Amino acid sequence: MPDAAANFSLLQRTCSLVVVLCLLHISVTIVYYMRNSDSRQAFVQNQQSPQIHRKLAEQKVNTDDIKLPSPTNATKPEKKLETCPDNPPRLVGPLRVEFSDPVTLDLVRSENPALQPGGHFKPPDCIAQQKVAMIIPFRNRDEHLKYWLYYLHPILQRQQLDYGVYVINQGGKETFNRAKLLNIGYAEALKEYDYDCFVFSDVDLIPMDDRNLYKCYNQPRHLSVSMDKFGFRLPYTQYFGGVSSLSKEQFLKINGFPNNYWGWGGEDDDIYNRLTSRGMTVSRPDSIIGRCRMIRHERDKQNDPNPQRFDRIAHTRETMTRDGINSLTYTVVQIEKDQLFTKITVDVGKQ
Ligand code: BGC
Image 1 (cartoon, rainbow, N blue to C red):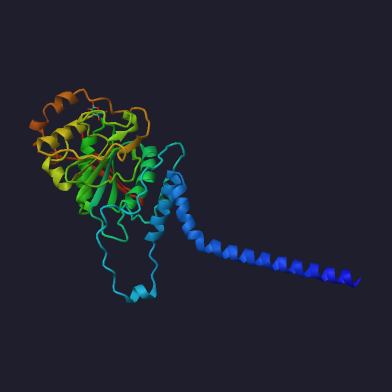
Image 2: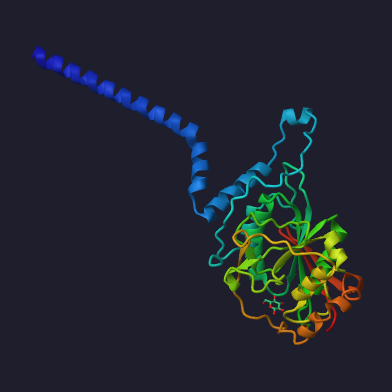
């Protein structure tokens, strides 16, 4: 019996030791896990699909944007901000862009808390190199606009631009006039802010790589160089359609865009002619960085191919001095300020 009692006591002590070791192991694991959760998040960010990758990057932008007042901030003099770098540090490169999941404006609003009314943004941690107005010619494409805002706002914030989004909505039932809407966007944006660069973007085009910077360069820039619609290549060397950017100076040098291209086609070729006739060349990203997706759609009503376009393109050099920003006339019908954009409805007149 004494042997049995001794064995029992030994067993009891062994069990207690095992329990203590287990508790110790669990505590060490918890401490280790907590200390490494930050680096684990960074690892996940590098392993995930581009979309999740993008989401995480967005979250980073958004949390960085929130500045909590602290007693030290109150007493210290404000730190002078430096100019943003040439290569924005939070870019993630290729992005997955798809249009199968529905998107709501409320979702986009909640994902972009740093936006100011009218779809304005300034980087919180540096002074942007350029003030860029995003001009979108528009009519009856609300579904497309949601995707544009959903994808572009986070990209433009990662690109550290000081930007505003202007949706120029053609009111009435007259034939669509894309280039005139772009001229109006230029004029209206300048009434609000001292923009020095203008990006002109179709509402249905989404970049697939955030290294395609939506800003201005030494020469006018064509940004949508590699569209899925054209098999990810330029349809022709002089193509300047889709998305482009011009500095204020470049825009004025060509007297803006033509006002008399009614219906589909030709106005972008006219703009190309204007640029080359004033001694400028077109700058472009490479065909990988310049990849973009177009949202498929039927041809719009009141936007049939313009039969006069070939004749007009042939005479750009003669017409451009009298037809452009210097001859622009229109009436503003309504201005709507959303968190995500400024929508300006205009009467562009008749054909
Ligand atoms: C039209 C352009 C258009 C291009 C690509 C050309 O024939 O004139 O306006 O952007 O085709 O579709």
